[in-house]
Length: 96
Image (tube, rainbow, N blue to C red; front, side):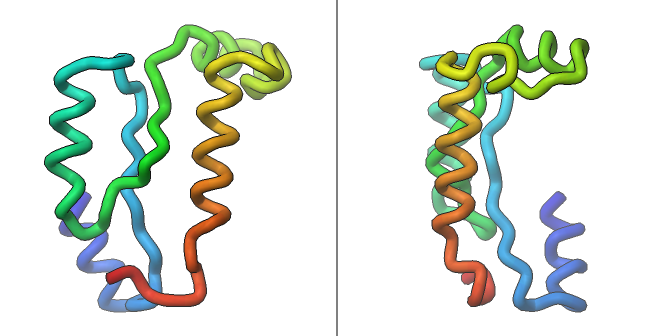
C-alpha cells in the first residue's frame, strides 16, 4: 500500500492520504499496537477506528447502511465520528 501511495504522489503530490483502522477488536492489544506503530508514519492514522461488528456484515447483506438498521448504535456512531474527522481534514493542502 505504501508503495502505491508513493507512486500516486508522483502524479498527484497534493493527494491527502490517511490510514483508518478498520475491523478493530475493541480494546485489543493488536489494535493499540497497530495504532501506535502507525502514529509516526506517513501517511498518519486517523484517530477514529471502525470496530469488528456484525451489524456491518448484516447491513451489507441487506443492502442498507448501518444507520438505516440502527441509527443510534455503536457502528453508526463510529461511522459518524470517522466522517466528521474526514470532514475536518484540511484538504486544501498536501499531506506532510
